[in-house]
Amino acid sequence: MKYIRQLAIILAVTCVGEFLKSILPFPVPASIYGLVLMLLLLVTGAVRLESVDSTAVFLIEIMPLMFIPAGVGLVTAWSSLRPVLLPVAVITLLTTFIVMAVTGKVTDALIRKNECGGEGK
Image (cartoon, rainbow, N blue to C red; front, side):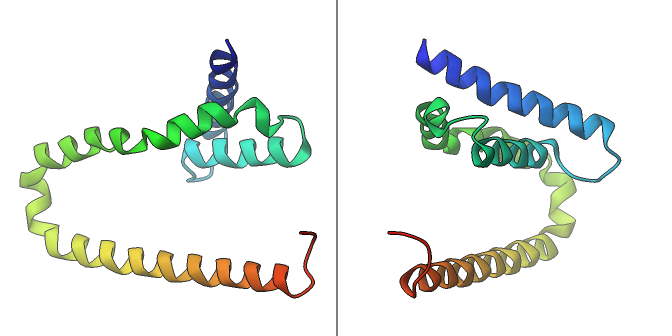
């Protein structure tokens, strides 16, 4: 029953994200609205971490399965993708390295901040 309740909370937040996407004029994916909403709910204490953690861990563990439909989509769209394969590959590689570098720098800065008298240990 615990997992059903946790999944219901996650799905409700996801549905609200979809609703926000449909009514707001911004070019933001519904999943981002849902993530920001879940973050706000967790930070404000409206939803406790214990209320979603087990199901969230499970969903993260099965995340590779979620990429199978995208891979199949690429295979079926190969004729459209082939002419732009090189630019897409270059952009994908560049943005991957940029995201990795920025994530590393931000993580480094946060670790240093906590080690140098930051908030509690």
